[in-house]
Length: 145
Image 1 (cartoon, rainbow, N blue to C red):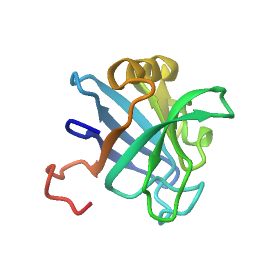
Image 2 (image 1 turned 90 degrees about the horizontal axis):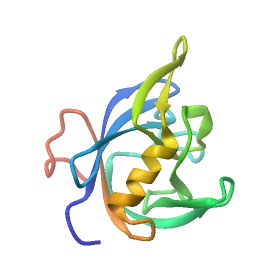
Image 3 (image 1 turned 90 degrees about the vertical axis):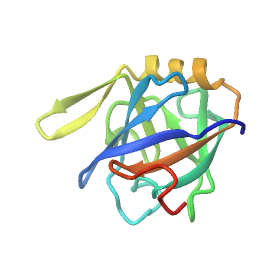
């Protein structure tokens, strides 16, 4: 996993949704949508802030290659995959090129397939990489992994 980690900066923590910005190597920004924070419980919570290894993995439900975020304490099978809202994930992360309100009070991301294709282009569909997850306002290198 050479190079600097890809950084996911979270800027919104709601009861049912967590939103963030994923900065790719060329400085392009994609948006992320995850479950709300529920103490890192399997299938219902976003993952804790930290540094993780990301590996290619087939998303069997969707039938395409995605990435698995590994080394999350007490968790497994956390994928970056296509979707639009927190209801589309079970502890995973969906990406999009835009943020939008799906319905009153329901926030999510749009253009998920385009965003995933951009991740493949920049990160390599079968490459491993590292991911740093942090809240807005944290300076890289000052958080505890």
